[in-house]
Image (tube, rainbow, N blue to C red; front, top):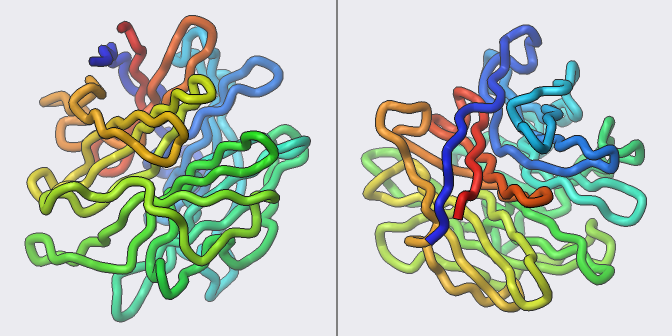
Length: 307
């Protein structure tokens, strides 16, 4: 079993910027070429509309904040587009000379509560600024994956973009509230932009208590050693808990949820929920950035692997 030492909240918006009034959702670390550890995340305005920004930290001491983005990296989409009600960054990956940002567009529904589809933006200046490649999703809804094609995690490997994402076409009723149901799917692309209408099932709910997964995070230790960190929604807990799995190819996973070693802490900012784990190793240190209650209402936190 892994053993983590929770270090506390790294960053919470100070409300000095109207677009970053609260939350720091879905922490997404990327080690820059200059040695700075950049944590991309989504912050919310007073209407709870999310836009992505970043927090730069010292990789040897993530509580030493070096810079915080003053403007959002992307604004919401044009009226009527899939991301007009929010942009949630989920994965940032270097591909050749560019950096690709995969994000979820939040689209409100009428007969259903909402849809979540995946868009992509690209940076050609080392991740300082991003521009949408298109105003429509790169993972659009399809007959096979109707409402949810989001929570993407991308890995550029052997001249192909590998993508793990959550997919679903159903809703379930939970204590009088309709909630989305989704599994984890997998696809590959040669350009990171063109994808199929349906992915391969990578991880499915294993019992009637589970009904959804949050943004996956894949770590490739070597050619036949993959780790998967993900969030699990259960009827019994309602809020997310963390899960863990291992694989030899990144396709077929053996679940080892009991080995994650990272759970909620009574009386703390993560007393009810813990989610969106993002694990990165820098030198001899391995960090897990994550969110707590209410999808990162109090900011994002970090834990350090001790065993």
